[in-house]
Image (cartoon, rainbow, N blue to C red):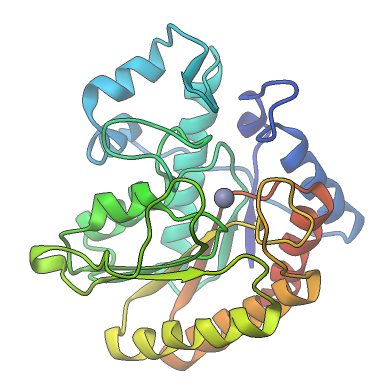
Length: 298
Ligand SMILES: [Zn+2]
């Protein structure tokens, strides 16, 4: 598994905020301890155009020329945010390109992305990394169809919104429900050509490892039927039982089992997987969870 990391992601930081640079530092420390090497993010040509292909031009310009320090009640912006967020998008595209060429990759990025909507960021997210990467590979005809699996504890409302009327992106989300941001009920299933290409799997608080794997079985069935060119994972580790922001009961061993299930599924349909980091706010759960994923994919 190719691991993409950059210190640029950590320029975006706010002391005392749960989404801070210590998250990636914890991951990097554990990777160093186990001798896993990372590669630096590769820049993407005309990246601003790629971002504006998914987000409203005015919103991108607003982040670039930031004026206020809070985008909303829980999402901060600093003078360095644009640089970090652009680097996170580039790393996600790098990972997506590897996955399409059947090499598994993990973009260890922040700020996270799956709550970011077309017109605005929210929920600690600035640009929707996985959506921009997905749009990039399809637009450039590197892939025809992509399946996005969102295993963050929260519903990826931004990713859902961006692909809601498309059938060349299948979006599946498992999330605690109800919880932030309030969306992600079972009957949100797409619109127009995208009808039935969005699947929300709302989970009750305290969902265990075994229950989670049981719910993941539908993902395998869909992957086989849909036959995408790659699987992209919105990889949040905030389902961890000690996460301070959520109430799920996934253990470190659970992250291993979930990763194995994804790997086996990718093997059945013979595609690569790109993991793109989203949430995870207990540093031990986050770093050990990511390590389990990397060990499974090796
Ligand atoms: Zn989350």
